[in-house]
Image (cartoon, rainbow, N blue to C red; front, top):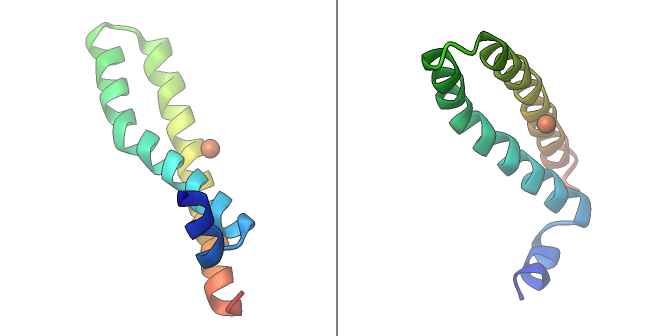
Length: 76
Ligand SMILES: [Fe+2]
């Protein structure tokens, strides 16, 4: 039911971008806690890995935001 509504409002591509952006932002919302947990446990390798993943996900989120902006500008 939700997909039927989504398709009348967004193209498949727009919908996929929104869904992926949501996933990226959910991760970014949580990742500082993951880093703190790793630091509290003295696991510098894990903290470093999450910092690197965070940087990658920030890049992906900006990329997806740019794609949404392109859709807005083109009106498609
Ligand atoms: Fe990503």
